[in-house]
Amino acid sequence: MTDADERLSPTPGYLALFRHPVASRLVTARGISELGDFVGLAALLLLAYDQTQSVLGPAAVYAARALPALLVATVFSGWLDVPARRTLLVWLSLAGAVLIAVPLVSPRPVPAIIAAGLLGAVRAAYSSVNVAVAAESVDAPLRLPLFGLSAFANQIGQVVGLLAGASITVALGPRVALLIDLVSFLLAAVVLAGLPTGQQRRRGPRPPATAGLRTIAGHPVLRGVALLTLATVVSGALPETLTPDLADGAWRPVVLASSALGGAVFVLVLGRGTWLGRLTGQVTVAAALAGALLLAALLVATHAPVWALACANALIGAGGGWLIGAQATFARLAPVERMGQVEATIVAANIVVAGCGIFLLGSAAALFGPAVAYLLAGVLLLVVVLLTRPDRLPADAGPQPTASPH
Image (tube, rainbow, N blue to C red; front, top):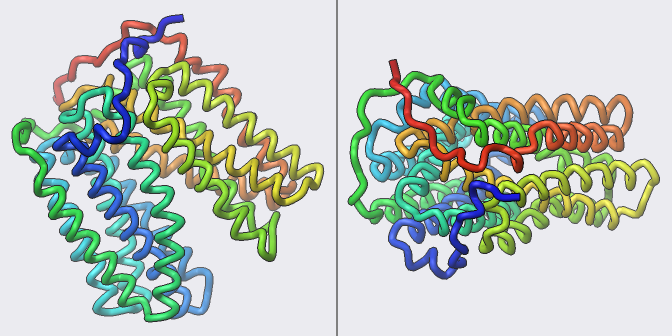
């Protein structure tokens, strides 16, 4: 079987990233930003809890991040491909510094929740434009290592950042952790300001908010990969959500972190090869993820040892790592001038589907037990794998021409 992406050149590995004038700055800024973001998030969560003495405080911080991010990725997505992308990345980093300064100056629940919400919007816009810059300025063989190392930075930043942010907040107060986050935004802005200006250009009239959706729906490969992506993110937070009900004592943090750790190792190892850049590799890993979810359901139903569940969660996290391949496929096949909006559309869809999915799976776990939640997630993903079969989509489906915004 021959895929369109079988023609991809071998990836040069991670060292080549740091010799590339654009990729090196993108991955460096991403690493700084991810670590600072999670340090700041830990501070906001603990600040909200300490001030309200209720889990509703941290829940409000998380909830506040979703709606503004969704608005940016839908209603305002047309603006993401209009200004010069380097300039937009720098300004988004500076906006993050300004927003995190609000709870830094006034460490109260309301400023923390407002800042968290607006930072969610900044994060969604930044991620979308970051991928657009990679699609525009980074050669195809380097994109998968770039997305892999960026995903690794996200996973490690989550583990280290939350731990460090919580520790700093408890020991020294939230202002110190928030200051670290502010400095990380400024450092990222400095790094991004050094991006080459050769391809900086304005991209004409602002397209309508639905242009990204129409681009994906009109491309057979992107449509299939998008459906598989949505079926994957449904269970993205399932291991962490079910951990408190399945593990306690010293095993709880191990089970809680196992999924992120599995994902970090997977993207670091597979991101430097070509396999995940191919549709067959992406489908294979998505099918393996469905198997890992079904395995977790079996382990929970049979009351297997907690260490076995931790291993299953690590496999689930690893399986979710195929999404860096999806990013590479989108960057290769979507029109470059619409890449920011296309990525924003996927971000918006992921936010909605992941939020609704984890609520429904959590409800199933509460009513019928955690094993049923794992089972439903695995069956859903397996059905979508069998229905979409993106590995059998047209081999010559390249980038589609950009339609008129009117």
